[in-house]
Image (cartoon, rainbow, N blue to C red; front, side, top):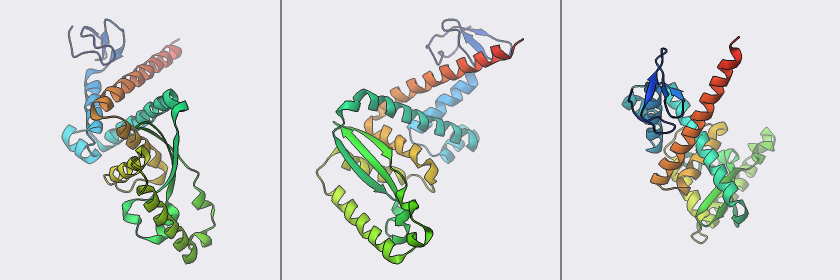
Length: 240
Protein backbone atom coordinates (compact mmCIF):
# COMPACT_ATOMS: atom_id res chain seq x y z
CA UNK A 1 0.00 0.00 0.00
CA UNK A 2 1.03 3.62 -0.59
CA UNK A 3 0.83 6.31 2.07
CA UNK A 4 2.43 9.56 3.07
CA UNK A 5 6.25 9.32 3.19
CA UNK A 6 7.81 7.35 6.03
CA UNK A 7 8.87 9.86 8.72
CA UNK A 8 12.22 8.08 9.04
CA UNK A 9 13.35 7.36 5.46
CA UNK A 10 10.74 9.07 3.21
CA UNK A 11 9.81 5.77 1.53
CA UNK A 12 6.16 5.58 0.40
CA UNK A 13 5.33 1.85 0.48
CA UNK A 14 4.08 0.10 3.63
CA UNK A 15 2.60 -3.11 4.98
CA UNK A 16 -0.62 -2.64 6.98
CA UNK A 17 -0.52 -4.27 10.43
CA UNK A 18 -3.44 -5.69 12.43
CA UNK A 19 -3.04 -3.17 15.26
CA UNK A 20 -3.58 -0.20 12.93
CA UNK A 21 0.07 0.65 12.48
CA UNK A 22 1.99 0.40 9.22
CA UNK A 23 5.47 -0.97 8.55
CA UNK A 24 7.78 0.67 6.02
CA UNK A 25 8.92 -1.80 3.33
CA UNK A 26 12.31 -0.08 3.14
CA UNK A 27 13.49 0.63 6.71
CA UNK A 28 11.05 -1.79 8.45
CA UNK A 29 10.14 0.81 11.05
CA UNK A 30 6.58 0.87 12.31
CA UNK A 31 4.45 3.87 13.15
CA UNK A 32 0.87 5.09 13.46
CA UNK A 33 0.18 7.55 10.62
CA UNK A 34 -2.27 9.69 12.61
CA UNK A 35 0.13 10.11 15.55
CA UNK A 36 3.07 10.89 13.29
CA UNK A 37 1.01 13.45 11.37
CA UNK A 38 -0.06 15.08 14.62
CA UNK A 39 3.53 15.17 15.91
CA UNK A 40 4.67 16.76 12.64
CA UNK A 41 2.02 19.47 12.95
CA UNK A 42 3.05 20.10 16.57
CA UNK A 43 6.66 20.46 15.46
CA UNK A 44 5.62 22.98 12.81
CA UNK A 45 3.63 24.94 15.40
CA UNK A 46 6.66 24.99 17.69
CA UNK A 47 8.93 26.19 14.88
CA UNK A 48 6.41 28.93 14.06
CA UNK A 49 6.48 29.96 17.75
CA UNK A 50 2.78 29.35 18.23
CA UNK A 51 1.63 29.41 21.84
CA UNK A 52 0.36 26.16 23.40
CA UNK A 53 -3.12 27.65 23.72
CA UNK A 54 -3.19 28.71 20.05
CA UNK A 55 -1.91 25.28 19.02
CA UNK A 56 -4.66 23.56 21.01
CA UNK A 57 -7.30 25.61 19.21
CA UNK A 58 -5.74 25.08 15.77
CA UNK A 59 -5.05 21.35 15.99
CA UNK A 60 -7.85 20.35 18.36
CA UNK A 61 -5.52 18.41 20.63
CA UNK A 62 -5.20 18.58 24.41
CA UNK A 63 -3.05 21.10 26.25
CA UNK A 64 -0.99 18.40 28.07
CA UNK A 65 -0.17 16.80 24.69
CA UNK A 66 1.00 20.12 23.27
CA UNK A 67 3.05 20.93 26.38
CA UNK A 68 4.66 17.48 26.36
CA UNK A 69 5.72 17.83 22.72
CA UNK A 70 6.93 21.42 23.13
CA UNK A 71 9.06 20.34 26.10
CA UNK A 72 10.52 17.54 23.97
CA UNK A 73 11.31 19.99 21.17
CA UNK A 74 13.11 22.29 23.64
CA UNK A 75 15.14 19.31 24.82
CA UNK A 76 16.04 18.60 21.19
CA UNK A 77 17.08 22.25 20.77
CA UNK A 78 19.45 21.70 23.69
CA UNK A 79 20.86 18.56 22.06
CA UNK A 80 21.44 20.48 18.85
CA UNK A 81 23.19 23.26 20.77
CA UNK A 82 25.44 20.74 22.50
CA UNK A 83 26.38 19.22 19.14
CA UNK A 84 27.18 22.68 17.78
CA UNK A 85 29.29 23.44 20.84
CA UNK A 86 31.24 20.18 20.52
CA UNK A 87 31.89 20.96 16.88
CA UNK A 88 33.21 24.46 17.66
CA UNK A 89 34.36 23.99 21.27
CA UNK A 90 37.96 25.02 20.72
CA UNK A 91 37.03 28.18 18.82
CA UNK A 92 34.98 30.02 21.47
CA UNK A 93 36.91 33.17 22.35
CA UNK A 94 34.41 35.61 23.89
CA UNK A 95 33.00 35.03 27.36
CA UNK A 96 30.48 37.11 29.25
CA UNK A 97 28.25 36.76 32.32
CA UNK A 98 24.70 38.08 32.29
CA UNK A 99 22.01 38.43 34.96
CA UNK A 100 18.56 37.76 33.56
CA UNK A 101 15.38 39.17 35.08
CA UNK A 102 11.94 39.19 33.43
CA UNK A 103 11.00 42.65 32.17
CA UNK A 104 8.15 42.89 34.69
CA UNK A 105 10.62 42.56 37.58
CA UNK A 106 13.51 44.70 36.36
CA UNK A 107 12.26 47.95 37.91
CA UNK A 108 11.41 46.42 41.28
CA UNK A 109 14.57 46.19 43.44
CA UNK A 110 13.26 43.48 45.77
CA UNK A 111 13.15 41.03 42.83
CA UNK A 112 16.90 41.30 42.23
CA UNK A 113 17.61 38.16 44.26
CA UNK A 114 15.53 36.20 41.73
CA UNK A 115 17.98 37.02 38.94
CA UNK A 116 19.31 34.08 36.93
CA UNK A 117 23.01 34.13 36.12
CA UNK A 118 24.03 33.04 32.62
CA UNK A 119 27.50 32.51 31.16
CA UNK A 120 27.64 33.20 27.45
CA UNK A 121 30.33 32.05 25.02
CA UNK A 122 30.66 32.94 21.37
CA UNK A 123 32.67 32.23 18.26
CA UNK A 124 31.89 34.05 15.05
CA UNK A 125 28.10 34.46 15.09
CA UNK A 126 27.48 31.35 17.21
CA UNK A 127 26.62 31.62 20.91
CA UNK A 128 26.49 28.98 23.63
CA UNK A 129 25.08 29.43 27.12
CA UNK A 130 25.43 27.89 30.56
CA UNK A 131 23.37 28.52 33.68
CA UNK A 132 25.49 29.86 36.53
CA UNK A 133 25.21 28.59 40.13
CA UNK A 134 22.29 30.17 41.95
CA UNK A 135 24.56 32.11 44.32
CA UNK A 136 21.98 34.76 45.31
CA UNK A 137 19.94 32.06 47.01
CA UNK A 138 22.91 31.08 49.19
CA UNK A 139 22.28 34.16 51.34
CA UNK A 140 19.99 33.64 54.30
CA UNK A 141 16.39 34.86 54.19
CA UNK A 142 17.06 37.92 56.35
CA UNK A 143 19.97 39.11 54.19
CA UNK A 144 18.03 38.63 50.94
CA UNK A 145 15.27 40.88 52.25
CA UNK A 146 17.53 43.52 53.74
CA UNK A 147 16.83 46.88 51.96
CA UNK A 148 20.51 47.88 51.86
CA UNK A 149 21.51 44.51 50.38
CA UNK A 150 18.74 44.69 47.78
CA UNK A 151 19.60 48.26 46.77
CA UNK A 152 23.28 47.39 46.39
CA UNK A 153 22.44 44.47 44.12
CA UNK A 154 19.95 46.59 42.18
CA UNK A 155 22.53 49.32 41.55
CA UNK A 156 25.03 46.71 40.41
CA UNK A 157 22.45 45.11 38.10
CA UNK A 158 21.61 48.43 36.40
CA UNK A 159 25.28 49.29 35.95
CA UNK A 160 26.04 45.76 34.76
CA UNK A 161 23.21 45.80 32.20
CA UNK A 162 24.02 49.26 30.84
CA UNK A 163 27.72 48.44 30.52
CA UNK A 164 26.92 45.23 28.63
CA UNK A 165 24.45 46.83 26.22
CA UNK A 166 26.80 49.74 25.56
CA UNK A 167 29.66 47.46 24.52
CA UNK A 168 30.56 46.91 20.88
CA UNK A 169 28.03 45.10 18.70
CA UNK A 170 29.08 41.54 19.59
CA UNK A 171 27.14 38.30 19.13
CA UNK A 172 26.68 38.04 22.90
CA UNK A 173 25.40 41.59 23.33
CA UNK A 174 22.90 40.92 20.53
CA UNK A 175 21.92 37.61 22.09
CA UNK A 176 21.10 39.19 25.48
CA UNK A 177 18.72 41.59 23.72
CA UNK A 178 17.28 38.69 21.71
CA UNK A 179 16.75 36.67 24.91
CA UNK A 180 14.93 39.54 26.62
CA UNK A 181 12.58 39.89 23.64
CA UNK A 182 12.12 36.14 23.27
CA UNK A 183 11.09 35.68 26.91
CA UNK A 184 8.41 38.37 26.60
CA UNK A 185 6.32 35.81 24.73
CA UNK A 186 6.06 33.60 27.82
CA UNK A 187 4.38 34.26 31.13
CA UNK A 188 5.19 32.76 34.49
CA UNK A 189 8.07 30.49 33.39
CA UNK A 190 9.21 28.72 36.54
CA UNK A 191 12.85 28.98 37.49
CA UNK A 192 13.30 25.19 37.21
CA UNK A 193 12.21 25.28 33.56
CA UNK A 194 14.11 28.40 32.49
CA UNK A 195 17.04 26.37 31.13
CA UNK A 196 14.85 24.82 28.44
CA UNK A 197 13.63 28.22 27.23
CA UNK A 198 17.19 29.54 27.31
CA UNK A 199 18.35 26.73 25.02
CA UNK A 200 15.42 27.31 22.69
CA UNK A 201 16.38 30.99 22.44
CA UNK A 202 19.99 30.01 21.79
CA UNK A 203 18.91 27.58 19.05
CA UNK A 204 16.73 30.18 17.34
CA UNK A 205 19.45 32.84 17.59
CA UNK A 206 22.07 30.58 16.01
CA UNK A 207 19.93 29.46 13.05
CA UNK A 208 17.59 31.12 10.57
CA UNK A 209 14.07 29.73 10.11
CA UNK A 210 15.00 27.35 7.29
CA UNK A 211 17.94 25.86 9.20
CA UNK A 212 15.83 25.61 12.37
CA UNK A 213 13.29 23.47 10.53
CA UNK A 214 15.93 21.32 8.87
CA UNK A 215 17.97 20.69 12.03
CA UNK A 216 15.07 20.18 14.44
CA UNK A 217 13.16 17.91 12.04
CA UNK A 218 16.25 15.74 11.57
CA UNK A 219 16.94 15.63 15.33
CA UNK A 220 13.31 14.74 16.05
CA UNK A 221 13.32 11.89 13.51
CA UNK A 222 16.53 10.53 15.03
CA UNK A 223 14.96 10.72 18.47
CA UNK A 224 11.83 8.92 17.28
CA UNK A 225 13.94 6.19 15.69
CA UNK A 226 15.81 5.56 18.94
CA UNK A 227 12.57 5.67 20.94
CA UNK A 228 10.86 3.11 18.70
CA UNK A 229 13.91 0.83 18.72
CA UNK A 230 13.98 0.94 22.52
CA UNK A 231 10.25 0.21 22.66
CA UNK A 232 10.60 -2.75 20.29
CA UNK A 233 13.56 -4.11 22.30
CA UNK A 234 11.54 -3.92 25.53
CA UNK A 235 8.65 -5.73 23.84
CA UNK A 236 10.96 -8.55 22.76
CA UNK A 237 12.38 -8.88 26.27
CA UNK A 238 8.89 -9.32 27.72
CA UNK A 239 8.02 -12.09 25.31
CA UNK A 240 8.45 -15.63 26.72
